[in-house]
Image (tube, rainbow, N blue to C red; front, side, top):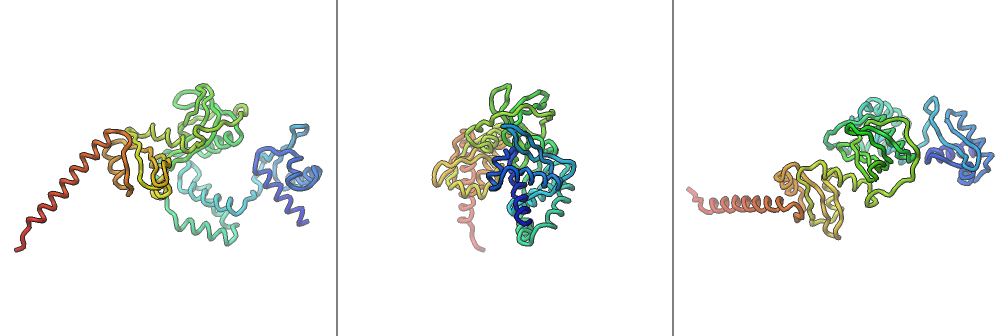
Amino acid sequence: MLETSARLLRLLSLLQSRRDWSGAALADRLAVTTRTVRNDVERLRSLGYHIDSSTGTTGGYRLGAGAAMPPLLLDDEEAVAVAVGLRAAAAGSVTGLEDPALRALIKLEQTLPPRLRRRVDALRSATVSAAGGGPTVDASLLTALAAATRDHERISFDYKDRRRRAEPHRLVYTGRRWYLLAWDVDRADWRTFRADLVSLHAPTGPRFAPREPPGGDAVAHVLRGVASAAWRVPARIRLHAPIADVTARLASTAGLLTPTGDATCELETGADKLIDLAGFLGSIGFGFTVLDPPELRDLLRDLAARYQAAVSTADGQAGTRTTE
C-alpha cells in the first residue's frame, strides 16, 4: 500500500511537470508496466484529478482542469517559492489578487512543516519591497499569457488600437511593469509589449515551434528595449567595478549590465534629464566613464568645475580667517 501511494505521488509530480506524457514514457520513469500506469491514472481520477487520455501512436496522458481544485504536490523549494510569491501578490502588484493571495498564503503556511515555515518567516521578516509603483495587470490576463507561453500557442490581441498576432516567448517583470516578449507574426520580428495594454482574444491559435530569443537572453532584450523607450536621455556608461559588485548595489530597473572584463562592466541606462542622470551616476559609488551621450560628458565637466570652484573658495576663506 505504501509503495502504491508513493508511486501515485511520483506519477502526479510527473504529470504536473509538463503538458503531455506518453504511457510508455511514464512507465519507464516509474519502472512499471503501462498497465500499472493506466491503473494509477484511474486512482488519481478517483481522487479528483482530471486526466485526459488518448490512444494511438501519438496518444498519452495530460493533466487537465477538473470541476474542483485537487491537492497540489509541491517539493520543499516549490512550497517556499509559492509562499514568497503569494506574499508579493498580496502586496498589490497584480490587480485583484491581494485578498485571494492572502487567503491562499494562510492555508499554505498552515500546512508547511516547521523547517519550511521558519524559512518563509525569515524571508518575510528580513525583506522589504522598495519597488516603485506601476500599472497593475489583471491576474487572469497574466495567467492566460503564461499558459500560452508555456504551451507554445499563438495568441491574438489588441494593442494600442491595433490587432496583433504573436508567438509568446516570456513574461518579464521589471519591478514596475509586466512585459511580454513575443515574435510578431505579421512583422516577422521580435516585439516587447506592455502587458497592461494587452487585450487578449480567445481562443488561442495553433501551436508553434519556439524560437531562440534575441541574443539568447529574453530578460536582457526586454530591459534594453524598455530602456530605449522609457528614457528621454539614454546613456552608456563603463563602470570601473566587477559586475557582481554593481549588481549587488543597483536594482535591475537601473538599466542593463554587461560584463566587459574582470573589473569593469557596461551599464545601459538613462533619465528624463541630463542633470538627473549626472546625479544618479554620482550616487552609485563606483568610478565610471561616460561612453554616450557627449552632452553628459560636457555637463559633468561643467559640474566638476563648479564643485572644484566651490571647494577652492571655501578653502581660501578658511585660510583668511583670524581668531579674535
